[in-house]
Length: 66
Image (cartoon, rainbow, N blue to C red; front, side, top):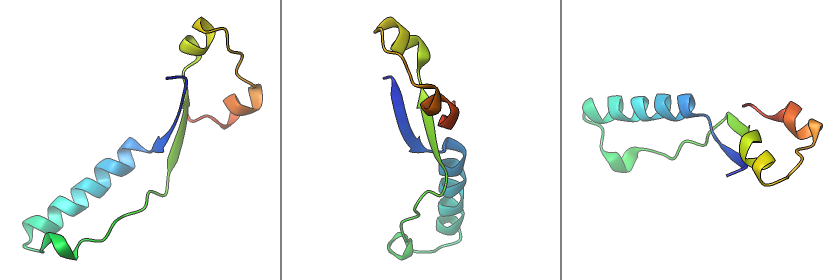
């Protein structure tokens, strides 16, 4: 994979923790609403891109999270 756009893992973990806490307090799973991620990470795999001979534009790299 050369390029990935995904929700932040730390944000996903926090959302999972909030959901588990609500379940442990006795709330019914049907009452849970879907949480839309606020932070999205753009990850560029330069090693894989280089192996395939792909030049990644500098403006894309400057926008990348990792």
